Structures are given as structure tokens and as C-alpha cells.
Image (cartoon, rainbow, N blue to C red; front, side, top):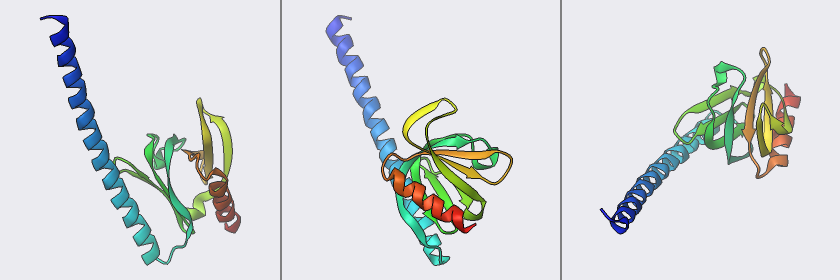
Length: 151
């Protein structure tokens, strides 16, 4: 087999792989959007008030296994009753608002360096959750501060 057929074969396989991955990500994004819509609808039905519009972000994990140590990409939803993170794959992290002690901005945390890091301290033995939300960073911190001040 010559070099040109090999390159063509590899390029074709790469295009097929990228096409399949794109379809899978589109499907996962659609599922996440549907789950977020469900979380928002349930919150509204329960009389919860949105403190800030849902926003895409990254969940970097928790120091407490109760909230899940495995991170992921997804959407943050913050109401006066809870913080919910809906992962792109469909998993959820749900924290009752009464358990949120405070949130703070960090430039790096446990080896993670990224713009827009927000560490959310939760009641319990040294429980912290780590989110990255570079857009509306200050607004999210203000919403967390308002929530924590009520508790």
C-alpha cells in the first residue's frame, strides 16, 4: 500500500470518528438542555426563585463523595432553595441551599488553574465543590453571597 492510499484511509477514518463524536455531543447537549429545562420547571412549580439565569460551566468535583468527585461540563442552576449542576452526560449534583456556607473566587485550587474558578463551601466536614464559570463570574459570586447571607 502506497503513501497516498494510507493517507486517504487515515483521513477517512478521522472524518468518520469526528462525525460520530459530533453527533454524540449534539445528542448529549440536547439531553442536558432537556434536563435543565426540567430542573427549571420543577423549581418554578415548587415556588423556587431563580437567583441568576442558568449558565454553562464546569464542575471540577467535590472534596465530599456525597456530591460526586467526578467533574464534567454542564449547566449551573441556582435558586433560593438549591444549587443544581446538570452534567452534559445527564448526571446531576444537587445541593440544598441551606447547606451552602459561602462561595469564593480562586485562581487555582487543588492543582486546577482556570479562569473563573468558584469554590462553594458546603456544610459538613471540609466539604467544598469547585465550579468554573468564566462568564458572569461576579454575578454568580454575588448570587451565592446573597444565598449564604440568608442562612
